[in-house]
Length: 80
Length: 559
Image (tube, rainbow over all chains, first blue to last red; front, side, top):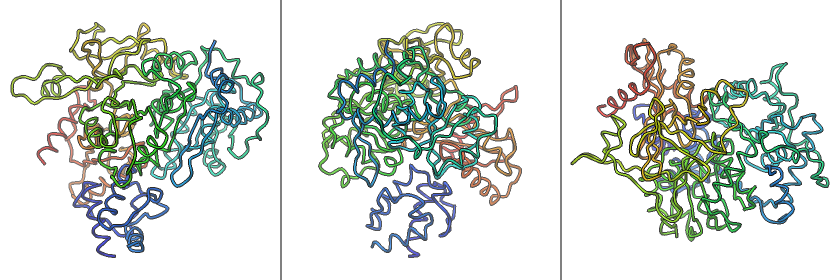
């Protein structure tokens, strides 16, 4: 679980936010807060598919399904 | 005399069972609407508008998401003879306060008589309106009367004159919402007449679109044109497409789509983000024209798209370009459908630094410009210098246009209309040059950022920046920089702050990024927090956006 969270955090801060020095808390809102915009959600979905072998359907790429790294990591774990 | 209403009537009489729409929603079965169903559903809205005391010629603002209600309420307004105007729906990223402020701006200038929305959104809208506002009714989608027999002779829309205003289009943000482009029935039909001739549109065509309807490309090419010309429209939600761009390709293959319009970034977006596993077995050979439009067109973007999808039957000559704007209803130019758009090689440095279009000097880097095509048969174009003199080929100036499909004016804004139209010519605010009758668009005179096809005014972003704690009025500058990988611009704000503490600056940067993202149509990619006296001002004390942009790019390159 922690490993998933840290992999996701590195990807998001480096590749999506382009702020490698930024830290991202596991309980921080990433979608509803506007941190990740809609154009980058598809990247996040593809990253998860390519790295964890888990499919997040496009209808699930929204704050109702997950809004924090913790929730997202949990979702990935239940599907692995 | 024809109007939008009479054309819908004709389609209803000649082809009642032909498919007008195939509406797609992620996770649901596709839903098809025939002309008969379109008219029946829209007539319910038309009747409700009448019962609620709305008068033909009044503006009705539609605040609805992709779906049946948006379709019926829009065409209901056309059948009734009212003027529909589609406002973007509140998204999860947008702050409700900002949305209310935007709506209040729209209401204060456009003075709509009614707003149509969902029951769960009624209180939100009511809370935004003030007593004394023009809005007399909030019409709720679940209170529309039942289907009854449609009697066209009773629909006041058929009594509209071709010179009456048919629709209003706004762009986003405070500045955009203050300038509603008013288009007459005649202007819309003249545009369709000229544009469909250029496109050689036939009844065999099928349009596939994910474009939002509050934007001219989506509203005209991806909504009005197919419905009025009697060809099917496969319409998906922009929110579904952006999360799953492969849906566009699946839809083209499934419905044998022939025509689509895309902003430049979408070519890069699809080429990079569609996986083979999601488009296995699809056939794109029916796609005869995919028109790149609404932001600067790039050869590299078209090429990446073609390389990515050619093995799925994509024809290279399907990749076309257009230069378009709401003030001309939509298209101004279109490339020749039989061949690839022509390109022109320029000296990159001369173009970037001096805005000169010249052949590359020996050993200099080249820039491959992509033509936007020739003007439509009803549209004339001139490239003008600052004094209004017409310029020869390959000299960059401001593009001006004249046609029989221009805006009637900015709605309730005679001041803005007077500024934009000079002796019947519309000054576009875009730079460009001509070459053998083709138009090459080369940047903008007006301060506007185009991100993913969305127009954003930098002054609106700067005003938002001043709302962030730690940033003072007059000490932020907003501009766009081109992102090669994304194929579009990114928004940048440079803000001067008093604190020199890096942690504090990081906090202000985060707050700025979040505030812009939640309060505008775009996401802020670069929040650059700096110390005093970074921002360059002109001698009159105004912020010089282009000079600050250059300074930022230099710093970025050496960082």
